Image 1 (cartoon, rainbow over the protein chains, first blue to last red):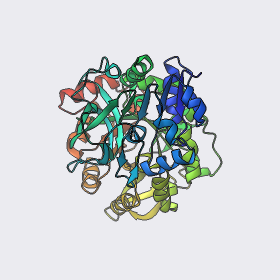
Image 2: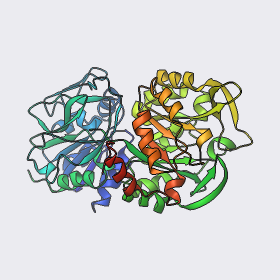
Image 3: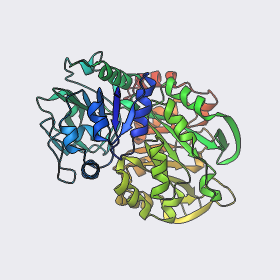
Length: 198
Length: 257
């Protein structure tokens, strides 16, 4: 049984997520095999690119029902987080529906898009994943679509408007920023995920 | 609040970091992975690795160093140089780079920008532009093959027109290298950057000319660029990133401490 499986979504940032987890002393398994994913203690769903292409990849690998049935801790990263919601307006595609919510174009109120660079969080919840996080911490974001804030937002970020930076429900959580590219602060989120007890 | 980015640029040749003056006379600065690691730990917000030989001599370049960097680096990094196709870019991204930057190949085949955008998403696609102020015409013009002096040539593009075109094709970020200023440490080309800023809706990174900490304050406050790229001032230890960040914060610039 693998301690941590990174779902091979066919997207490009799998290596950087793999190395980031490895730097924390855990050897992850990268897999698109439903049996291996089901047996993992923890699952990371990475993703960059477009929601439509990524959901297509999951469907092609026949992983949608597997991901929807996971009971262990699951962390979606960036596009992987957006895929946890019910629907994305990026390509008008149904997502995994693990956390209620909608992915919409980021309302940047005239600021430049993509929202690319280091930004801070606000409205940070008491949640095991966010242990040690403060409003002074900077995380690395790269995106043009975002999850609309809701009761499932565990932390928000502001760029022209508020959007959900971290979401969570039951055993499933997601981060819009890239913890694998957010220095020591990002490593803290991954470490918290490795220690998350349901 | 979104922070302005400080971006050390490491020019790479044969796995070593090198630096020339106005694109010439390259000297070896050091090994790539330890230098990258040192910059990440010193507070760099992002790194750019530019394979300076790749675009100009047409050979297949060993890019295995990308994976070695991805293993140790926990900040975003971009790879430039010699990326001529979607397949080339895919290999670099798969090895762990966050973005690819294209320059001469985009001039040869502008459609490559659109193809990269469609395949990997806008956020992966950086277009580097080498812009030179031509005194005779009084215009900023785009140059290509700037990695090799013997092949460097002026293109038909005015810089402003090319900036508009790459955005239309789907670039996610533009690095504007002001060649007149490169390597001479006399300050960023504020007039040009300001003028390009007005027509640039995607993140704009200033490159070429950083010599003092004040130059960074000026480029952020005057030209409103999203990031400032520099090489020699960091490589030669003229500016320490921690001191630079403290000064920029004191000057009221939004910076990640």
